[in-house]
Length: 138
Image 1: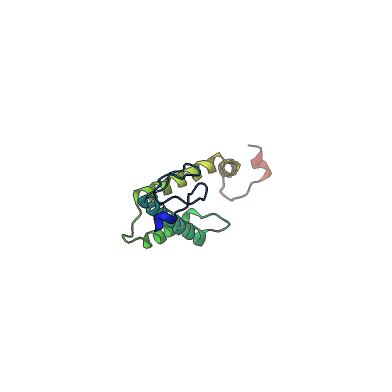
Image 2: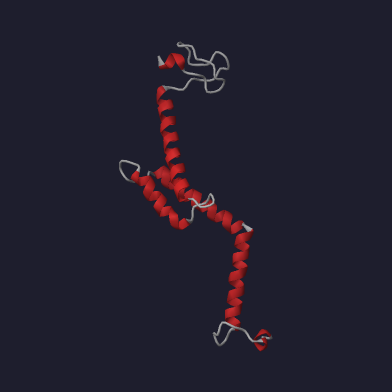
């Protein structure tokens, strides 16, 4: 039977049919329910990776593509919805990437560029988009 031939996840040895613990390493055998749950989680993760791979460009997905990703994920479920856990993971991942961006040198450069443009716009009194040498003295 399946139970008789189950290999230990830890050491690869066969479990004895009457044992719930591996006699070789002491690792606990998974129950059928735990194995089923693990298979479902792995299948969901495979789908998520597949959707990411379809949307990615240089191993990144632009935020404008996220709604498409969610739509593709929801089309693969019977209800066509995202569960709470999936939604929370999505939001947490988004927030983490946002936090990392604002801590990065790229963000500092972007902030500096915004400040430079604001300074230029303040000095460009005639809104011509250019500066004369006289305007630089102000």
